[in-house]
Image 1 (cartoon, rainbow, N blue to C red):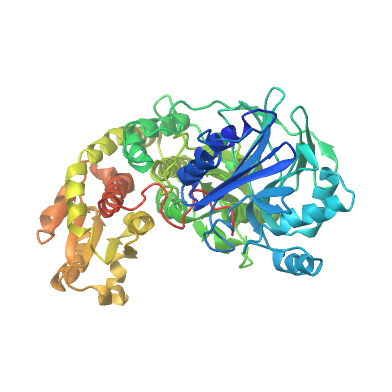
Image 2: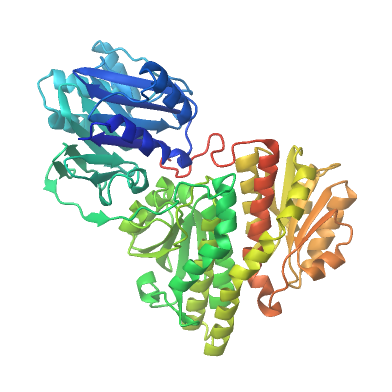
Length: 615
């Protein structure tokens, strides 16, 4: 998604804004810009592409000083929605060189507003929905309103999901901000204040942060912050002390954040485990808070990688706890008039805690009377604040757009939840739980073993990097891994990839098989491996290049495979259930190395954002 940063009350405000924008680069963007008020003029610099282009432009325009003088500045990294990638469409957007606005989200009724403003004599220079905002502010300020009054009139005119910051030369010591469904944080300083899309963007400036709630707006001065709700009533929002994480925006010697985050998994997954398993086998999940006083159907909603984690969770919860689970794409849930018959609890999964489609699904579930819960990585995110109960993955900031450590940590929580529900509803015995917890504690070591196979995976990547299309297959618990593997690959390498249930091969996908098409199968000895190997043999006989990621037994049976990656020997009775953890690593490494071989932007792939805050 787009990123917003604003600073008021610091003489080097423009420099601090650029530093904040650097911390938002992980979200993905295609242009950037900054505006500042100084000596009665609006100074504006924008550029296409990466932030370094903006910095170089600033350098050139201000005689190598990098930044212009100003005690108030706003900045933005844009991900194109309305209008193509261009300097004209980059933010900040302005009106008559007196008002500037940066904006995340979408103004849904912008066309009607734009037509009306054009009829009133306002000129539009961009193709964006955002440009209606500075013109509306200009219109209402010209009518005699102060910045707060003008902002309130603007809010009455617009509809949509948005977060924006506005500044005006007529009020050079004030900022007007507002949010509706899109996140916005206020950082509190000494005779200075800061605005950011998230706390991470301003945690180098302050550790005291408050979050606006939906419908809130605020007038920000260097020494005052006045927050108002949708009824224009002044309100106090909770001030949270945040801690800047050391090394948060460094790659730690790795080439990419994604590579770093893949290799962090053996060291951060124990943090997730220790949160939910105490004293080796005591599960620390409150099932009553989750909404499970009785045995009812669980609804899980999520998007992207989190949705595939939910699919794995469905297998585990139904297998271990004998509890029915419905999974729903967050983007579809509230639009299909879902029935909640037999349901008591809803679980949403989101790495960022800000995914708008997941947030809106959550709110719809709440309206329908469900107990609401979340698996999130970011505490105090919007989803975290709105649910009844949160389960935190605690794996640290994930900067790479393609989710890696968040996926495996979500799986950890879902598996432990399945065990807790199994104990409550399916008479899972204490000794059995102790054995299961021992296997969970062994997982970080097993993941480390998988990472030791990197050179082999890199070699395979070099052999298939030029493929035009790649097929992923899996059965049972590993079918979602096939979907996730395909998603990872297409996200960062731009190779067309699809995941299928192996049993569906003859129902259509086999038509895609031709000479040299890579077919990657995840396989484990679960009693159904012979059928899966038969599916693989059919692909082989039609010229496919077979890559098998499997246990030793399956690899010995599928001697025809061109490349083989053997997962570590794990406890036989839990090898099948825990195999998604082991398979996730080669899926991630394959995608990473293929993308790296092809020279794509691994951490910030085209057209993608880390947190999707528009529907």
